[in-house]
Image (cartoon, rainbow, N blue to C red; front, side, top):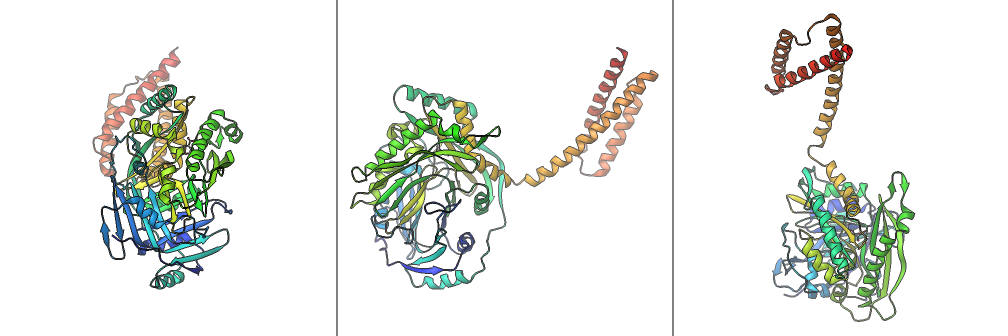
Length: 546
Ligand SMILES: C=C(O[C@@H]1C=C(C(=O)O)C=C[C@H]1O)C(=O)O
């Protein structure tokens, strides 16, 4: 099948200054839309652009090693497409536009796409149904440059002018469907003990000399209902990070990643490996210097930085690779991470596939050396990673690429949502603190999901009522103690069968009149209360007898 040619891109300026509101409207009108956002303080490099994929023209979807390419304008599909040749066709490296002001594709390459580049062991199977890769090439996009305070439409089809006019004139409000709920508890595939055991096995491989480091991860899931975009809107508030995105594909994917994988602009290529994690505060004490000086975390990061130098070196001019920052401490919400920067100058005449071949999957989520680490991961982990630890990004037709490492990300298959977390394991890793670190990494996602638990409001009401019940019980037993004292003083026996029968009878009848109290509960509950009350009275008498 003929793949659509990259047509001349036209740039039209836009007055819209609230891209997330625009996106909420875009997704209500079109299929396969997407938004990439960089959240946090705006500067020249990060939090600069918001990129919205508005009208989809082509898509590329990979499942179990099979790639299908669809030309959405004619609705024709080729089920035997070659993933990398389509990507090479879509992205021409070395273009002169060094910003995302160019049409292009948005989407993800999941971790399983690794098998395009190397013969890795394959043991785990896809049990979620999420495609291994999903990329959409757009003929209408909207890009906001927050640093320059400007916004643009990019289009290659005059027909889209009507849509642009409609969006420009629409009220700038966030459109979101009614609800998003999470049902039941979040469960993980490993129990804590199993995870600790896996960490020990990883360390055995390290001691045996197979690897220096492996990034071992686990999956969490729970049931959901409704529109995941509502969760995305909330995550923007709870955990703003520089590599956010929402891909509104057949199975939506949202990312709150802090980590840049690859940026390509003109001939420069860079990667910002993150490795080394700590809560910002432990017992009220700031952990920045602790992390900066942690030998273990610095070693973890340095190994991966070295791996990235090697990977980027494979596509860079000789002598051009350098590391302007090694182990810088950066704050991402409640976490500090060590982040390095590796950059190089691309050799001329490279293709997109050369870059992926040299670097994918990212070293920070595999370990070192990469190939052996990936095989060990396949042996030790319990589930496929899906989009997690792959890359999510923008692939511009003139060669501007910006992408994240798809960590702190959630994918949705219609009934369940899934997210994963993990960390780099080295020889001196302590299994229990690795488990804690992993939980710190998912905390913002799991806590935000819990806010949407369908039972949350009811549970809160029950908590209040239970509080009142407990106070009343406390009052009741306070009086029971006084009764005990009186019985003791006047020699009245603690057990008063007639009174017990009376109380049980009256309470049971009153319970029935109330209507909602289950009939069997009251006699059982009050028998128990009276039993304990008599014990209290007896203890009281015994105490005063002593
Ligand atoms: C694997 C994850 O994170 C990776 C591991 C890190 C670490 O070990 O310190 C830090 C950032 C990521 O490269 C994750 O968040 O799930």
